[in-house]
Length: 475
Image 1: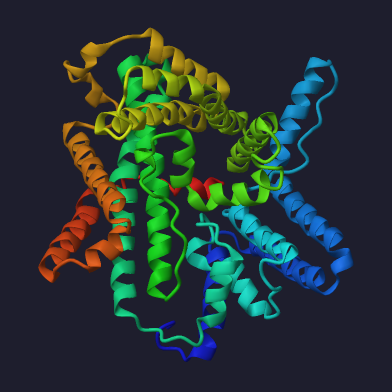
Image 2: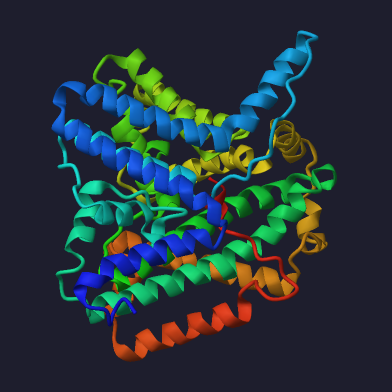
């Protein structure tokens, strides 16, 4: 329908489709995204037309949107912590007045709309006058529920021009479909398969040893990447087919040589959002080293809390902040040691070693992200370091944790393929959809047919499989 409609009707059609898409999950929660849209749209106009009151207008719209986010996402968390304190003081607990279901994607569209308000306040963009264009910017369905978190200076501009430009773009459609196909492979053949292993081990922590714990930790590192990068590929590919260019969200993050570089490659739309709207406004690195470290910790603790109402997420974010603070503090000592041993910093072995250390640090932090509770995370870590059991590798008992030999073989093949695609991304500096579009026709179709067959044959779906939703739908 989008392709055959005249230009004047494309945006209303996409807006209707986006709202229908969101209402398919829970119709009444569409009022929340409508509220956020109306509030930030009105705030943008007020900020631009009444400069003297723009601080008050920005503060009001930020408070309103964060209040809605807090009510639906963090109220239960705050109440449970309050009751814990009251229990220690031997006071009566506050009863839970109601049960709330977390609105899918609320953190994503809230941050996207607040980013627009802040950009208008800073004078980076003009306030949008056309409400339909702005509503489509907030609710654009490919990236509505799990990002990428788009900036108004990019996506809103594309929305305004979408009804005028030539729609049919063969290269965009081919590369978009190819990118979507790769996203389905990552999600259904890798993420949902390794999740079986990870979930089985995490629910049986009392029975695991070092090998199983390491397998689950490494497995979740792969799962969350294949799951979220898979979703991002589907979103970016779907948007590209309709002539929209969404920002890159992942850039081979496990090839990073430091935690700082990891956050330049992982969930790029969120990390740059926190950089531009939290870290830099706090002062960034402009006010001395102590203030820089404070700003880093605040940014990463806030990022952890954004991911979920749990101390595990806060600890995970704080751990990444501590990694960066420690890395900066130890940098002079590291440089002296490297100079002492005349280390070639451009050597492959040096860079590979840095990548491995970064992967180990991020993998350890993922334990807290996955565990669901601090007590389970520490029990998991304890089993990892106190129950050494290398024999399970040789007696094949590792195949009793959800994946048999055949399933494990498919998983390993999928991970190797994902590694190869990451190498292509690193070398060619382009995504797999665009890379494939530039290959010879016979090669393209061999790859396309293989991926389609793999998703159909190896994909985890069907009556006997409880298909896992995308992990970031929870945030």
